[in-house]
Image (cartoon, rainbow, N blue to C red; front, side):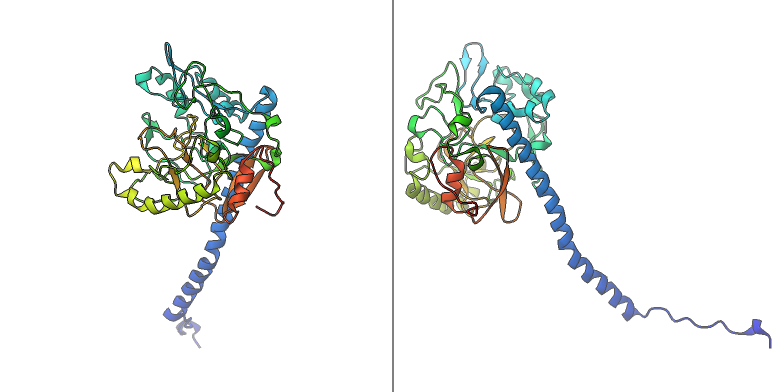
Length: 378
């Protein structure tokens, strides 16, 4: 028999139905694995964010040890014979640059001038430094800021220096001075009706009688989305006048608790209308944390009044449309599910849950109000 004349043996392939079943199984496996991959990526981003705050906390401790005090925001000269108060002051973050491996940026700053690059005030020499994007001040879970800052990319800042559980940020406000670690410390040759130009001494470890492990130094916030036409939890609603005295003792919690609760409810009710007002940027301030150089609320200073990602919006009390140097709430928020990171004054970092009560947040923010906290309260 001639084997060469045999027909080849038929080998059946996959049917269309079998192929579709295999594809469906693969799709289901991908759908099951994707959340796990995303969760792993978020865990890595959160770990890096924690490390950033750890660096800030250790830098703060080293700075205090070297200088005998924590850095405050101080005004400086804008030109011959002209001194500024809150506007143009330098931030605590800028003072700490040399302590978290940013010596070149620190050395490029002229701290005797104002903290921005406003050409009208003869200080564009600061532009190179203040437009530098510093990765240690950016949380990997947060989108980068959009737009330009003095003709360059916005540097951004996800970590605010806490003035405590206080609506105020001026150290010369007497009994209404902020109750946290940081504040505006004034400037040498200036005064204004609120005494914000009066210079006061910076605070040190000796002033943190609640304990450095129980006092928040830095908190996390979402940078603004720079879109005034939509509501976001990081937006700052303006204006929402405070029914109490934001320069007196009631500016600090828990003394002003009842008034504060009324105010945040009023602000929440007012917030939706801010995206329809004109000009929108004055009412829906969507540029929180756009840079790290200026030492005032909304740029680098914030407060600990509500837990991270609260349903209540941030609020600003002033009816004038100036910069951020205005009493109000500029608080905790993050892109991490369930809460946000805070760095304590001892350099430790904790994840503060969104379910943390206001009383606990106030206690963690203040440095010397003798609150007693249990380990499981946050």
